[in-house]
Image (cartoon, rainbow, N blue to C red; front, top):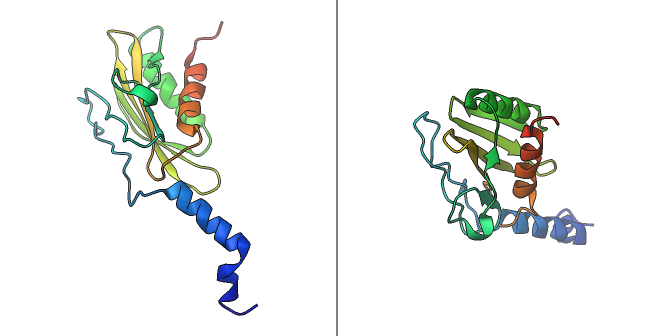
Length: 158
């Protein structure tokens, strides 16, 4: 095979097609962390139009996921949440304060980064959540599954 012949091999073409599919039309971090890392953040950003995002907002439509419920003092809930995130594989807590947590999660094989945000609503005993892929169009349900795993881990022992 010539030195340039490997570029046209069926395996190489399939790999390029897979990377293009996963990267979609994104040209940069389009997940949009708009609520910032301030302790005065009041809401999470909406999801972009692509399906690789879930958020617990009333207007989320197909992106909708239920907020996380907690029991007991809100400080304990946010501390438990931060602890759960720090134990999840390939997940790193970036910012954590009394009412807001921002973490990143990295995919296993291609190392794509997802942003995961949590915003405390102590009046309703809820933690609003947003999990969004930075790149790509489709996430194969990974963001929704992540939120559900966190929800299960946050439940009190019975």
